[in-house]
Length: 174
Image (cartoon, rainbow, N blue to C red; front, side, top):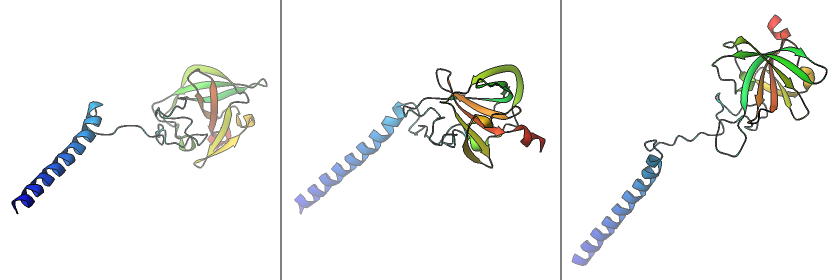
């Protein structure tokens, strides 16, 4: 009987040590990152809407910086002031603090015009989309008209990647 009690005590001690070791390893790994045991990694479903994954391409192209090997895009807001026959679009830039990464539902009401303009070259590699009623639809350069409010995205090298037409001059007049 004494052997059984000793064996039970040793077994209980081994289980207790195993449990404490498992808990300590888990928290130590997260605490070492300086986040007090919390997991604050950013998912690919967050993009400013915060990067809600509802970007124009629908494939997390405009990412929130998650370390998944995809290129980080920079978004800008503007109003098309002129469309050239050579594939260029003149855009009057706007500034604001609102998040614009949820392209299908972007609210640009908090953006104000600046004095800056930018000329965009819309080549074959540039994706063009229109946003209406929370849905993004592929379009072509014909959707880029004077008076349209757009969100355009550039890659790390400053190359234009996509343009989303959020509203047109006709929408504003209605």
